[in-house]
Image (cartoon, rainbow, N blue to C red; front, top):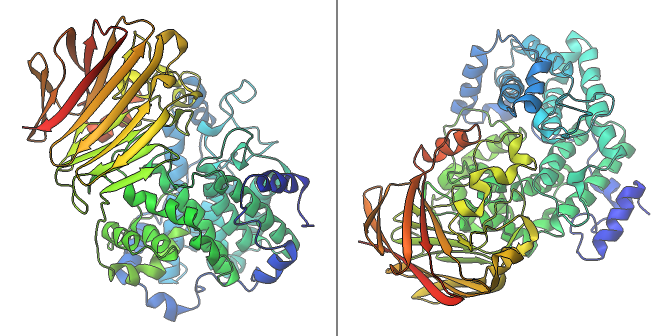
Length: 640
């Protein structure tokens, strides 16, 4: 029996009931001990004393870190007032606190890299100041992640620490400072490294081993990106800092089980229900763990990357691409996604996917000299694979058709390898997805890479976004997606509100998704069945055909969202000028009225929408005032 906690054993038993336990089921505890390089001997990257290794890295990238660090060498490490934390409770604002916290870590991480490159000791005192300042913070997490109860009311209970995303991230910075600069710290005072371990153990290691955190896995809800993201920071930190090998392996054993809680129930199709902008923290964070595990065991976890589900998880990121500038933006995803080309390349190489490697090379910013805000360890992997990536062909795969049956998401275009012509994405699923929007039956249409009908995606995150008021925010509601309101009723949240009878067809000249979305509405909507078919007729148009059977036929309003002004040419015809491309929407004129409104973007949450789309969100409401109990309503999008 493994020398791990009862909680871990329980998770293993639960997981074995329905899954493969790809990570935790391979090796016994004794076998793990024999696989892992000891803390003292583990050298994941060349030590700072190995000047030959560091001198071979791209000098422009390293000089970029040095130049930025020079600007910060006299940085006054700020404290974070309690009132900044209280804002999350008082106004819902999370940015004021986070801006200070994130900047401190960015400065520290940049100085560490600059000192490694220059190796003159100029940054040691500023780095020590940064470490000390961060260790004196009451909490390493952010107030947005505090429980929304009176017990906290915007301030952390320091007597009972728990681990959120950014607490785990913080220890990663300190762990790598210890690894690369530990001897230089000891030359100043032995208290520096002692403080790093003490704070890391008290704030991160002990809470993670002693208590269950919701992101580790909950009954009835599969974990989201927090699971692998936190595990990746937990794993690299404990491997670097924990000198007690027995404890080190206890942590590793638990991490493997927790990761399987993420991987076991993950859709076999590899689709990320949080959308492509969360892929970098979900599937990609799983890969971070695999990469670290392989680095620490001489490749003992390479088998994970050969698993078909893991391969599918990897490929999702390029299958979800619309054009060079856009990705699908269902749920809280962003329409413009900052992808890490180097990470994608490495993941693609691990799963033996040449298309993914080329995709990663396409987005790789070879001259990027800025530190990524999160996943600090990725910077070191990037530095040592830089030459590989820049010598890889740069190609966007842009697959013609992708179907994710578990998510019920269709992604298709006129022709593979180009964004010329029509692109359509459509979804079914359910209304309890991670970062959920009520959007069953939603679709988006692009032409020549430009948005025509859109999913707005997310706005600025505030306390309200993750509260019981979430669906008071317009861009979370079904009446601000390309979905119908039926008899004046919208879709509610919850797993019971879902699409059924999904049927996907793909042919050379068309592709379609048909499903009953009537089951996404409550009983008072008066629906027997409401079948929606979204069809791309390649090179011609996109048609959306709704066939319904109602208990009452008061009205049906088709909502359409766009980022361009809309003109009603005449009843039955709408015109959208999409970045110079004239697009026409036709619909049955009989018994219909049309309202075109510009959505007012005025709230704190709306600022994120403005950042992505500008102040240019329009909603089209096409209301059939006499739909009858049974009927069909067809909309067609075509190019003029």
